[in-house]
Length: 352
Image (cartoon, rainbow, N blue to C red):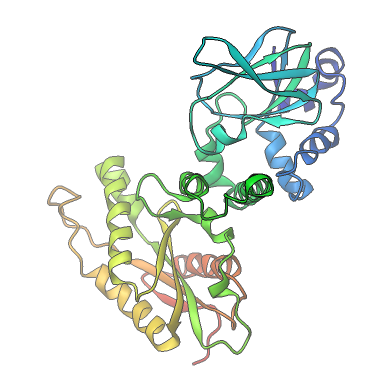
């Protein structure tokens, strides 16, 4: 039996709560269950609310499966009540017990975060109640695009927790281990462009942790004025191609070293950790002109279309201490530039 969080909390939710899940009485109770999970514990109440709002409860009767080997790893579970046995098939066509889980335990996280099929079987040994995140019909990638900071914090906490547990046993796993890097790639990569996504901004970026006297480093946000026109006139496929092309151009034109991210929709973020102010300004000031002069006829099927962009710059030290703070300020500015007429360059702190 399934019930969504919104159903639990709705006008008829109290009845469902008493009948189907007496242990979970309020939204605060759901947050309490989530907070008991190590990698959700660092989240704020507001961030836990995001997780709870996209979760579902599931009742599993004794001796019934939760999942089986080969099932898609499309969610993780928190056991609120009952008991679950996790087993793994052996070559002798038997099963080996891996873990017996009780209330408060979580499971299925590794396959979920790494987008892999289940490698073990999970079965309820008693009547059990589970929280599953995300709920049915909710795509993790969509949530990641909508709530990058919340999910990046949970992921980073999970990686640190698991790596620490394994290191304590055999000292062989570190943050740079292949499986950890593969897990990060799954979460931090934008599938359309192959670039990093906004969740990457919450990774520890020491090169942006500078003092107020720092003379190098900046975050540059780039937002087109009229990419929506490409979608409206020519369709979504040409619109996707335009986004891919802009990402490729920014990667080719940005001063090195640099990192280009697809920040949100058709907005891009360029991290320039070592560029001095003159190099950053030269890049920003010429970018509008270079984009304005480009032909997009390959994408628009020979129809002439002029594309313009807005460029917002935040300097490390002067405008913020890390990549997230700098990008937040530049993001606000780039929308202000677009609203004030577009095809412009602006700086978070004006010195001229």
